[in-house]
Length: 452
Image 1 (tube, rainbow, N blue to C red):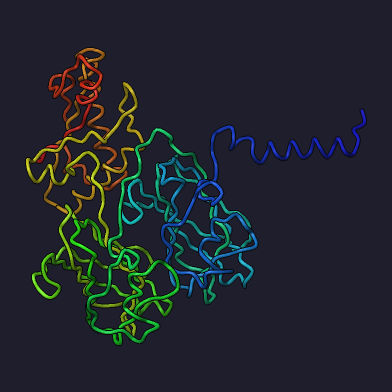
Image 2: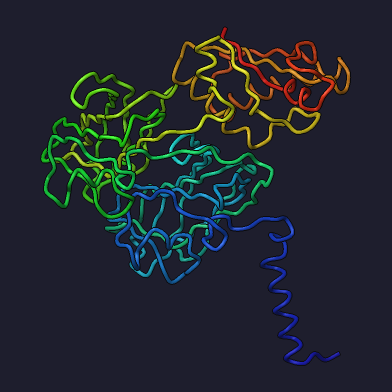
């Protein structure tokens, strides 16, 4: 049978479309990073300009437009999905191509994910090396991984003067039943009326200290020497702050980038009654390096003490952000443990009649891991509790398996030593509400943490 040329072309086009879009569409997988799909950048270390080399070109779907950082130093971008949704991601695609010499194209890359905030709780899911070829290069995660934010760290290029890349795609699917993203506010933003109260020095107006409070872009701060110096930020009002994030990137040599930093806060005076809240040692990567406090503290003034850099002639940094965050469900795990030695954690959720932890649980599990890392002496007993559906023997076994699953998550995914974690299951024997109602049964299905 003969096939006309036009019919053949129609068949070829249909088959081509099925090959390209069919399998992904059938599985519900899409490029969640795409601007057209609601993807957006929540942080980038730098961009050469805000036109033909802006960071937004990394996710705009245009092969003709690329991104360039202001130099070839290691730097990062952080991608969020539509409505800051929680997703299950499978593959990262990067095309390093730009219209400039391939020596500028990104080479070594690290991928990190967070299920909570774009400034904390990131964990690495792998590193890979891009070939000096202008095509999509695929990094497949070992297993589908929950993520609300994806950080791409561009660690090196092929020897050129700038760090450049063309497109980033994050292939996965949104989890429509996931809890809403935890809320956060940068109270140190110039746009929110924060201001620099004091600074030790600034090189000149093009390197002004006020740039530390601006949006991401082209300008940074430089002190007149590499010596220890301070910057004091006046917040618009007293705020309960939970995190301080600093980007140490500068368009000059990475040896000038700030390294050792101390942070102090005062809620009463701009010049006294400060108390220390944390220290930070920042590697030579233009990223949001974060001090996360075990519990929020009141602050009206935030003092950042830049103690040392990486060996260069000036002290330089790009951004300082001071965050307030929402604690879903009232008191945080840290507050509960501090007050009573016990914490009820209802945000850890499991598949029905199963010990499989649902992806939306990652946020609170990361918080628990952070507490353990901040306090090396802290040891916890993980208790599993259930409702009465299914009988005593079934629920006792299920509660034990769920407690063990939490321990495994903290050990395998968060790097917590197993010797600091014990588990026990109580099944239906310790209800806190009436099992005769659905609301009561929901309250009884819980994980509790007990300080040893």
